Image (cartoon, rainbow, N blue to C red):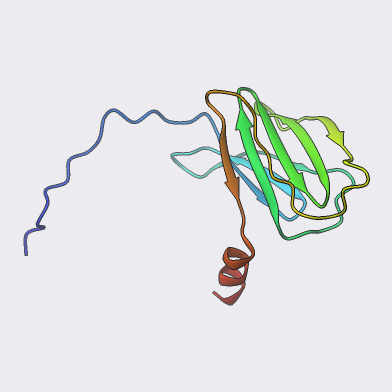
Amino acid sequence: MQPIIERKQRTDLRKPKHLCVLVGQTVVALEPLTGDEIWRSRLPGVFGGPVGTLLIDGDMVFAGNHGRLHCLSLDDGRHLWTAELKGLGWGMVSIATDGANAAMAMQSPAAIAHMASS
C-alpha cells in the first residue's frame, strides 16, 4: 500500500551542536544524529529530585534542580557556577533567558510517571 503523502527527506534542517538531557543529578550531552555520549556532568549539591529543567543558551547549559540553578559549559560539561536560591524552597526551577536562540526542555511529573510505568 502506498503512503497517502509522499515524504521527502528534508535538507534544510540544522543539526544542533549537542542534545542535553537531565536525569536526576546528572546532565548528559549527546550527539544529536547518533545519540553517542559527548560528556556527562553530575550537579554538585543535588541529592535527587526527579523533576528538573534544562535550557541551552549560546555556549552555556543551565540546569535547575532541587532548588538550585547550575551553569555548565556546553562544550565540555564543566561546572561554571551554582546559584543556591536560598529562601525559595526545594521546588522545580523554571528557567528563561532573553537569548534569541534559547531552547528549554522540562520533565513534567506526568512524563516521569509515564516513564516509570514503561
